[in-house]
Length: 293
Image (tube, rainbow, N blue to C red; front, side):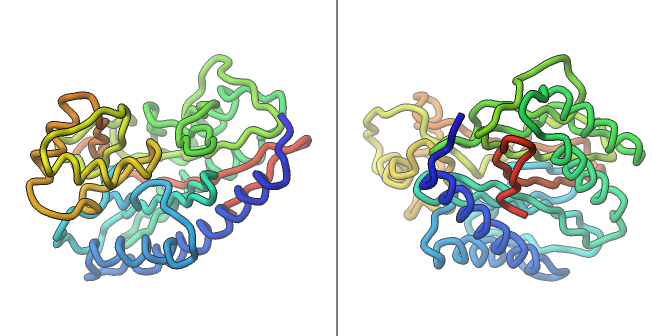
C-alpha cells in the first residue's frame, strides 16, 4: 500500500501533537491532583492546537487497564501508590495518532518497564512480511521474562481514517499467524503488563460510548446525546461531554435500541496493577516510522 503525501503528513502531524500533549498531560498526574481537572486540561490542549480528540482521554487507575475517564463532577484524586495509565488519541483530518504511557506514583518501576520494554522490542521487529503473531510472541516474552503477565485479551489495532480499530490486530501474546504486516499499514502497538490474572473483564461503570447506527430518537436527552455523537463519525465520546440533565436515561435508551455501543471500564482482578505503553507507527519498506515518538 502506497500512502500519498497528504495522508502521510496528517498522520505525522497527529503523532507529533499526541506525543507533546501526552507528556504534558501526564505531567499533571501528581499526588493530590484531581482527575477531572487533569482530564479537562489535557483534552483542552488538543483542541487549542486546532485538532480533535480521537476518543476521550483515558485515565485508568491501578487494576483498571482501559476505557476509564472522568465522570461528570468526578471527585477522584491521584494518590500515593497509584499506577495511572494515560491514553490519548489525536485526530487531524480524520487521521489518528494513538499513544499511551504509565505514570507511577508508587514503587511500580519494574512493571512500567515491562510494558515499555515490550513495546520497544515489538517496534524493533516491525517490517513488511512479519506476521502479527510474531509481534505478540515478542511482547509476551519480554513481559514474562520480567516476571509479569501480558494482558491476553487486549490488543493493538490498525488505524484508518475515522476508524480506531482497523486491520491489523496486534496481539499481546504469541499466536499462530495473524495478519501479515505490509508497507503503508498504520497501527498502534499497546502492550499491557499486569501483576494480576492476565485477562481483563468489564466493570459495571461506563463513561465512553460511540454511535453505531443512524436512527432518530424521541427523548430530548437522547437527541442531545446524538447532537454530540453524530459529528464524531463513529468515534467515541464521553458521557461528560453531553450537556443538560437526564443523560443517563437517554444513554440507556440509545444503547437498548442499538444506536450506541457502550465501552465499560476494563480491569484485571482487585488489588492488581496494570501498566500500559503505546505508540502509533507507519510501516515503511524496511521497518517503520513511529509517529508518536
